[in-house]
Amino acid sequence: MPTALVTGATQGLGRALAEALAVRGWDLVVTARDADRLAQTVSALRDHGHDVVGVAGDVSDAVHRDAVAGVVTGVVTGPAGPDGLDLLVHNASTLGPLPLRPLGDLSTDDLAAVLAVNVVAPHALTRSLLPSLEAVGGTVVAISSDAGVEHYETWGAYGASKAALDHLTLTVGAEVPSIRAYALDPGDMRTALHQAAFPGEDIGDRPLPEEVAVPGILALLASRPANGRYRAADLLATTSEVAS
Ligand SMILES: NC(=O)c1ccc[n+]([C@@H]2O[C@H](COP(=O)([O-])OP(=O)(O)OC[C@H]3O[C@@H](n4cnc5c(N)ncnc54)[C@H](OP(=O)(O)O)[C@@H]3O)[C@@H](O)[C@H]2O)c1
Image 1 (spheres, rainbow, N blue to C red):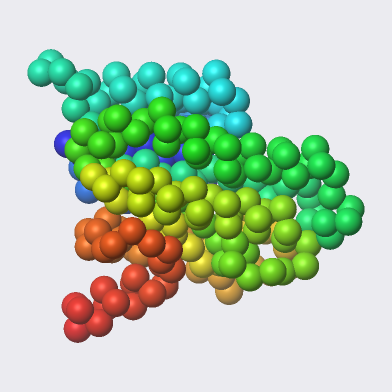
Image 2: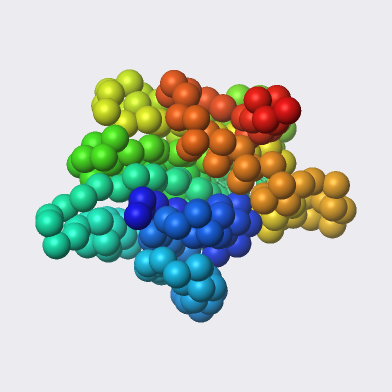
């Protein structure tokens, strides 16, 4: 069975993607901070009949990341020796302090905390798991945002972190030819993170993660195009054109 690590897999996009992978026969390692919600998620994912392990913790915590890397290595090591990690999804993310605020009102500690979750943690996990990814020509998917390309007022810390995440992800792809590396813009999604960015606003017109982002990621995994930055909506449109 292919094996994936999805960070931040208890709600929103991470949860929906983990569900879609479990349905398709993937073994999973999933993470999030809230241990109770993680246990419920693991239990639900196991209903699909495959191995699912949860590791509770904050991706910005190096001790937690070491535990995650240890669990992944254990999961992908079979009786015949170490196998590999087929998919690493950097999904866990923070917006930073809320409400979102202009850079002039953002402390250096706040910026550092955003970078710790959205940039440093994915790099550290990729680095730890690179041998497992290389063993099977695995795939790294970093969940990005249009805020990593556009310059929206008050989104500076988050946007800069996504730009940095994109850059690191595509650089590791250039450095390690045996793996594929993608920065994936999921588009706006009706999730807790999106609602937190737009407090009090009706976000009911945004698609759920399973409507565009997850099918887009599944299309990416199926087609394995050249390393690069992709938008889920574009991947989905291409898939629909091919199918029709
Ligand atoms: N929603 C959008 O419109 C949108 C648009 C563009 C890009 N994105 C990106 O899409 C990804 C998923 O976002 P979402 O909207 O699905 O978010 P979400 O609904 O808020 O879910 C976030 C998940 O990540 C976990 N998480 C958050 N911080 C974490 C940390 N420090 N360490 C470990 N786990 C953590 C959460 O669980 P715990 O709270 O228990 O840790 C939860 O499982 C993110 O990378 C986000 O930047 C979202």
